[in-house]
Length: 311
Ligand code: NAD
Image (tube, rainbow, N blue to C red; front, side, top):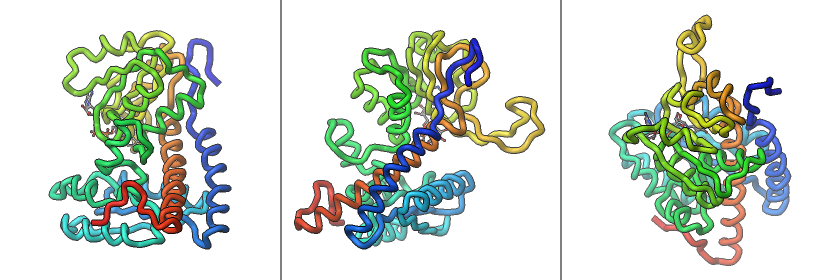
C-alpha cells in the first residue's frame, strides 16, 4: 500500500500471474489438439551470470505454463559460423516453436549473426529485421517482449496514454526504440532521450509518463520528475547494496531510477525487481504459443507463413 505522499506501486507480478494463467489454459488446449507442447529453445552462449539468472526464470515460467523450455548451451568460445549453424538447426526442427538467444554475445560475434539467422516465424523476441519492420509499419509480427511489457503494464494498470507526454530514456533496438513505437501506437506523444541528449532533466520535467531503459542506476531521480508522473523503470542493474542504502553489502538488483526520491514525487512507479520483469517473461510465453499455432496452421494449409525465410 502506498503511504500518503508516496507513489502507487505498479506491480508486475499480479499482471504476470493473470497472463500466465490464460496461457496455461491455451497451451493445454494446444497440446490436446496437436499431441505436443509448444517449445521454446533458449540459446545461451557462454556462462554469463546475469543472463543465467534471467534464463532460469524463463525456464521456470515455461514449466509453469506447460511450455517445453529447452536450454541450448554453447561454449563462450563458439564461432559465429557455429552459432549460426545451431540456430538454423533449431529453425528446421518442427518441434521448436520459438527461439531466443541470450545477450550479450561474445565480443567477436556480431549481433547480425543471430538477428539474420533466426527464422522470423520463430523469432519470439522480435529481433529479426522483418519483425522490426513489421513493428514500425504496424503490421502483425513478434514485438520485443520487454518493450511490450512496459506498455502492457501501463495499460493494465489503468494509466492513460492517449494524448500524454511520454519520455522514453534509451534508444536500443531491443527496448527503447520498440517501446517508443508501441507508445506512439497508444496515441501518446513520445520523446526519445539517449546518451547524447543535452538536457535529460528538461525533457523529463514535462513528461506525464517516463519509461527508462538505459542501464545506469540512479540516472533518473525525483527532482527530475513532474509531480504525479508515472514512472516505468525497465533497467536491471546488479550493484553492491552498500552503494544503494548503506546496507550490509552483497549484490542486489536495482533499476535506472532512484526509487526512494522518485517515489516521493511520482504518482505511480514500478519497483525493481517486481515491475516490468515478470510481465516480460509472461508475455514471452504468449509469443511462443502464438508461434506454435501459426506453424501448425502453416503446416496444415501448406502455406508458408509470411516471414518464414528458408535459409
Ligand atoms: P543498451 O545499453 O543497449 O541501451 C541503453 C540506452 O540508454 C542507449 O540507447 C543509450 O543511448 C541510453 N543511455 C545511456 N546512458 C544514458 C544517459 N546518461 N542518459 C540518457 N540515455 C542514456 O541497453 P538495453 O538493452 O536497452 O537495456 C537497458 C536496460 O534495460 C538495462 O538495464 C537492461 O538490463 C534492462 N533490460 C531489462 C529487461 C527487463 O525485462 N526488465 C529486458 C532487457 C533489458
